[in-house]
Amino acid sequence: MEHDLSIVKQAIAGNKEAFEQLLILEEEKLFYTALSYVGQKEDALDAIQEAACKAFLTVHQLKHPEFFSTWLFRILIHECYRLLKKGQKIIPYEESELLNRLQEQENVMANPIDLSDAIQLLNHSQQMAIILFYYHDLPIKEISEVMEKPVSTIKTYLHRGKKQLKRELERSATFNEKAI
Image (cartoon, rainbow, N blue to C red; front, side, top):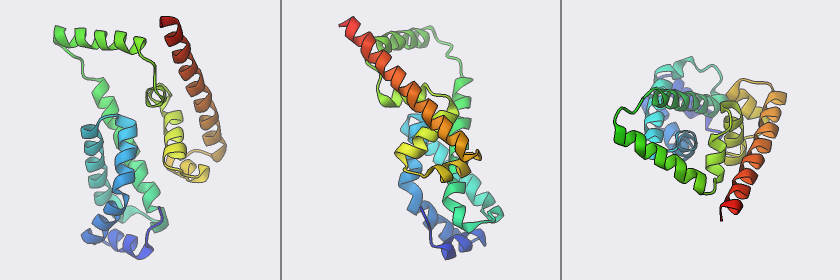
């Protein structure tokens, strides 16, 4: 989303109200981006809060005001990955928790996989490229700026990601046809 550069420049200069106004303009996209990465509303809100705080503390370092949105989403995506990594380190210690998780996995095998589950199976680079391209309609050039990768690499991530999504969805459909 392109913002009024004067508002961005005010935010860079330390104007809290201008920064808040920019966040309000982006709030819906921020929420759905975070939700697509972390999967739960509470975690998405935590990621947005942390990203907004980090962005506010470092906005004065932004050299190109026209890339505010790209810069903000990069911070959010890194925060989502940090949250996901933090969540992976937690080991359930109660037996009932372990049994519930095993039962959930068995239920997943009996239920068809949906697109959001299939996206979660992609590697982080493919996942990010797919989400930014298809869910947020970002052009490949802008995705390359967000991910700090060449355009050709983004095209490769998209191609391989779509191929893997197709395989996963077909595998799920085939498995469920046999189960029925």
